[in-house]
Image 1: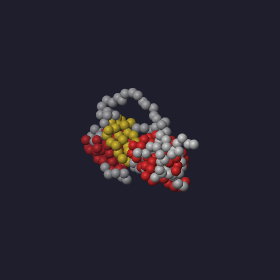
Image 2: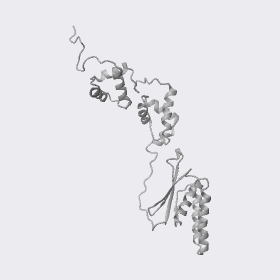
Image 3: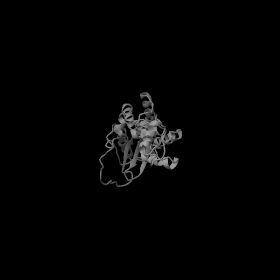
Image 4: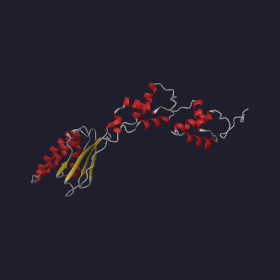
Length: 264
């Protein structure tokens, strides 16, 4: 003879498998709430439904609620690839990993196992895993003092290519004394004519040249070196007429270098 013929226990009576219960649990999972204890607490507070963790597992299976673990998303391989591809298009800098892609898909009610997402990402965008590796951007930190005798002693020039993937490059020019002179948007920070234009534009706007310029060893800086040497040589000419011609020479150089990039 059964001591509990009605089947009641500390968790209450039998839990009805209703569409409202399915929508509630699916909503929690779509919000990336995947801890079963947390889901049980939310069901108790928001819907006055109490159940054990084991009962919750059974309810999820009985109601065919989508979870990444159960692999019941109902998508073909082609559809999974398309879902991941659409998310990767929104991330041209490759900064988002499989966990982010999985969570963003969950918000749309699509639950794909993270291993499947990772496999698709390795197929579509293998370089992204290298870019996101912690050691990829590691650089040696150089310690020491920056010494400058005054403004316009040295201009430091360098390209910034973090946005090149979306078609934007920036060439920066900074006075070592401490002032940023220009952040010039260029089509390509490794193009000799583009960086030469950025340098000549700052020369034109400043009305003069520095004693020296400091750049890396990139091949695109050859034109800047030639301009700096020639302009310093022209500036050394004492005749006022030559100096006037020198100013016209700056303007001519800026116009010539800017063709195809921007107007001076």
